[in-house]
Length: 260
Ligand SMILES: [Zn+2]
Ligand SMILES: [Zn+2]
Image 1 (cartoon, protein in one colour):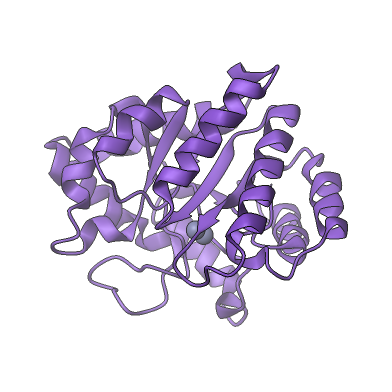
Image 2 (image 1 turned 135 degrees about the horizontal axis):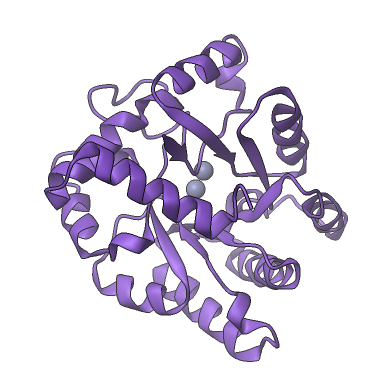
């Protein structure tokens, strides 16, 4: 059994065939899907999918790229919805300096708010980071230092692509590493990164509908394609596919407290 720890199943690109996408995921051995939120609307959509299908869990947060248009009222909604028992993490939050540098400070404020909410609710934090690694780690370290419940801090650096030097620092902060389709891209260097991650901190994800693995690269991604990611990790670490499935599934169950 495989757990896709990061998949946007509510995305409009699945509107025409969402049930078939879930069926194909099941057929490919993907027993559990975790749905990160990007905004308030997506939390509700994800919760609806939890009600409709077994083995689907949701998250609550405002994505760093959606922070620009968001308000305190949205944060209040995130907080309210995060109390739902089907919410297994606060995410995706973090920093994205790639698309737009005009609201870095607001992104940082929102990131800190999400970290504090996760610590308060004792939930893992699912972090989106694009070209902001140093700020992400520094903010996590600062928040840990100033929290009364710092030992609750844990989470995942989703779509992790290195650099390798980051691994030890993130492990020390209680973080896992979500490996996705980029590990199948030639010259991405992610296979080397995979070898540097402690086995007990490794997770798999698709980030569907984005970042489809080879041989589906450039097309719409879906959870069933996670098999390509698992195969590539098995290659990189010179272990069997079933070893990677067992390892990453038990890691995900521990981090997200699934089946507890
Ligand atoms: Zn992301
Ligand atoms: Zn995502």
